[in-house]
Length: 245
Image 1 (cartoon, rainbow, N blue to C red):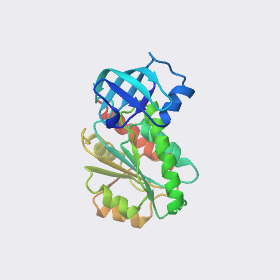
Image 2 (image 1 turned 90 degrees about the horizontal axis):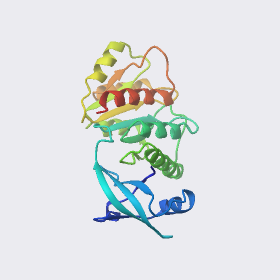
Image 3 (image 1 turned 120 degrees about the horizontal axis):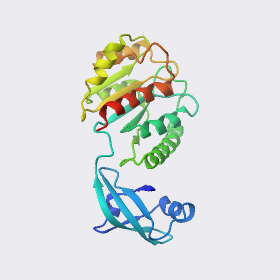
Image 4 (image 1 turned 90 degrees about the vertical axis):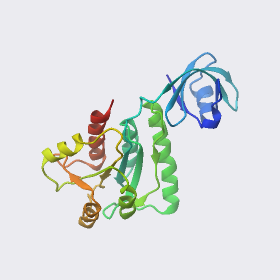
């Protein structure tokens, strides 16, 4: 069943009105008809099971059949702080992170990141990245569209993460897998979690030092060196397994 997202003001007592680009997608791409059922999310905690009742060039009207609250999202807000990778790897990272339940993705301009974005390039990338997040959220039947936040410097990212309950940095020089298991197993549902992943060149020593001085913990993901697009997905997969109700 197809899923769409709307703003709260589009939701009435018995009906929901879909507007914007989804109208063309429903009418001309999916070629849906009145009587077909769809899922609609308010972007927070509610999922509306609806039946299409009207197809207008400017809107799609849907009758609310029943409402399901919560239960589809992980009980913890996970933030993926991703060092800017080369080429289009960020698109894959965002797509898979959204599928695995991430709450938000924070692109981070680290010292060893090859990619450098000026304001114009960043604005264009953010639009593209947010679109990928929305598509992945629809495919995964998420109740929210995870935000891809503006690019932060490493220092800004560490400061932003200070209020989170758990902050972890997978680091190639970290050891003791038993400690990693212990740290991950102690995370409780409801805690906010920040995961810091370096770019292809990893984190610079001064970045690791800054993270440690802020109270962040370094962990190991094993004896093999994982690519930047693999490391974050590994941690998110483990957390999904541990936190899924």
